[in-house]
Image (spheres, helix red, strand yellow):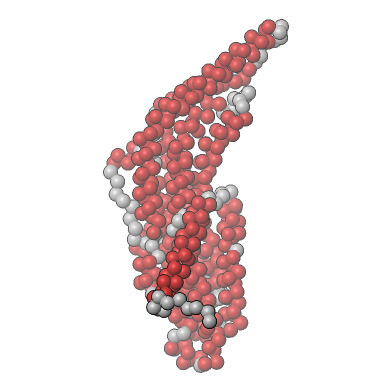
Length: 401
């Protein structure tokens, strides 16, 4: 079963993310100059309207024998300086966004990745050994595109880190089921403890099914990151254009909100989507340490306990016959109840942890894809059962007498 987990629980979404990343990177790089030229023209048009409006306001003030409006100094002058700076940035092509992504998103992904590895006590080599997918090798031209390949590599490694954690948890559930009804356990403890072993088996089965389901949902998490990347990339020239009117007075509210929507909001969504990939590591580590405390010595530190889970030492030590003998039926029932309760609290725990870092969780698209996939599997399973019944009955339907 452990070999089955190693081969099955892999990063199913990594290759799809890898290829979509390349498609978006090539597409954005190809059209970036055209979008930048359009933004230059649009910015000059808006700036021309500002000058005409300023001229009209001053002429109107002189006609009414009033002091000239200072709108020119407050808005036009500042917009002119900003526009010159923005035109220079737009004229540099993808060099500017590549620099920005290098100094912002890549450090975020690297920090999140290293933090996740430190939590589960595994290094990059150990993760690559368990989760075998390797990013597609790219030529040197990819270094000159909108996103550098290093960002892709860090995001994929971040997903692989979480998958490696899921492998350990699923194996723990299998080990609990295996230890519950081993021949040595039954012969040593007698038939009187059968209820305790049934409860322990059910707890292991629940853990196995729960984390398999969470793993399959996680396989769709790449969708939020890739969509956030695409939105940030295609709206980046517009966000640069809107910088020309930032801090300028007498600008319509819709222009200010539009600039925030295509600039700051898209930046935050991509950061949140990257961090959300690691939120599972933090959330489920806390949960697994709580559950594993039922088997381990109370004096064992949480860090040492997490290392036992990821290195599979807990199977030989804390799930030994001596420790299982000390677990009472009441304790096993409490363990099952705690597992069910904690599973229902996962969204709240994730929200609480991320709020501590002042980060939101951008998983709406991936959650919807996971739900659609579950519905599709359910419908397919029901259809297969129905077909099986028809075949078993020889194609004859039972009629009520």
